[in-house]
Length: 95
Image: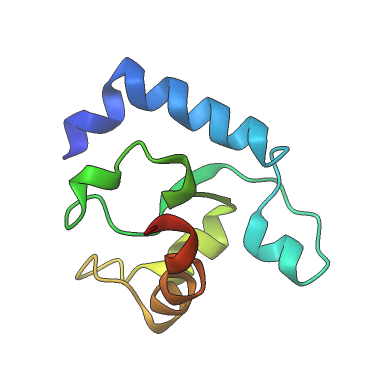
């Protein structure tokens, strides 16, 4: 999957999503903070849901700190925080 992140399709989509979200972390914004977004997070993980890899509704601009809170960096599984985000956003993604 790492090669996916090097494709022009991904680079273009990532740029569009960051622009859509005004380069602000959506998670921090929920709490009234204005923090720059540097990451485009797959709410439904790419490894498990490749069919959603370029779906705009599945992509979430966030800062590195929030992104790290969504994943266990050892197992790469979603954390409780990542699962909460998935549950919160599920209805927008799966229609």
